[in-house]
Length: 61
Image (cartoon, rainbow, N blue to C red; front, side, top):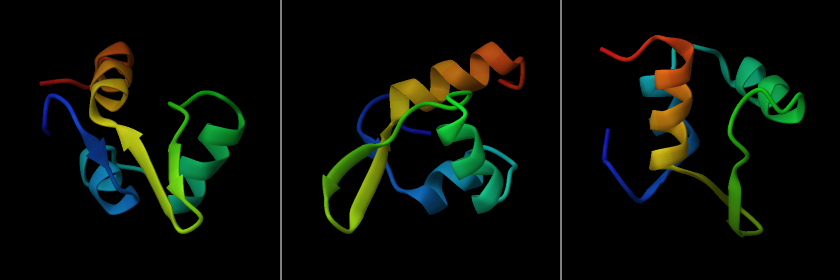
């Protein structure tokens, strides 16, 4: 995973073993980092937010 930058949904799901539905359920429940809307059709997550979330879950290698 990159240290900084943006990740699209498929990239996030390659690092976090959950389904798309679970990803969005957790985003709406505020138990997963909030995405950033770059445009109407482009949603991304900050790599550092995802890395921090993984570390907090105790899943980091």
